[in-house]
Image 1 (spheres, helix red, strand yellow):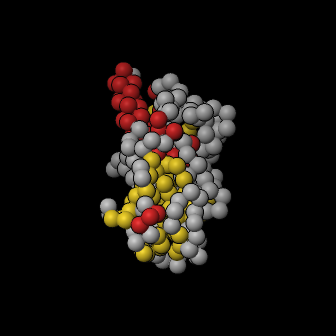
Image 2: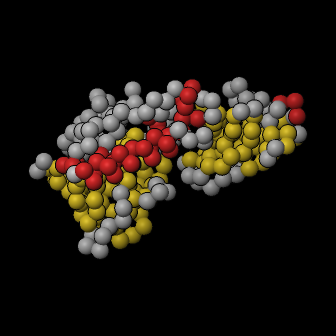
Length: 257
């Protein structure tokens, strides 16, 4: 158990460091879907638009908007692939990135001096509990299927690669959840009865690829809040329909408050 606690503490230290990064999720300060007609967006100068494929910024040097260190004088164009994001424009200490979600282009602002980052005091967690380190069976899907899910933003849905199902038992109750692959490997996004009371509306648990015998280890002490718990400007996918653990999961991260 001592080894498990030490590994968990190391995981927690890395998690807190990740959240505090200069370009981390705590630096987000704004989000705008791009319109078809060149338009001022919030407090940003210039006029922003999209034709569905590319994003456009129309600006003059007096607007103070730069691309690669050069003030925009006329039109700047950029695009990104679905589910991707990339830095695009600088405005003072604010970096403006371009992203595509659900086929739509949007911009999102980041500032290292954001109040969320400067006031961040860590994420509360449940105490480490070895009972929540569970061996499960992974049942892969034979085909490369995708699932349609809602997201933190009501107007947006996403298609996620569904890799298979994890099957396990908690307190004698059988559980079966769909595992997805969101850029960084296998994970389950799940609801449980603690949501809205002790924890966020849903959480995520990442896990390693299955062993040759098809087993995987689900360490719910490492269940984390997705980015929407820290900012309104995230586009996090919700759990696949039916991904609900029927017993309270009092392990992993609590609501940041």
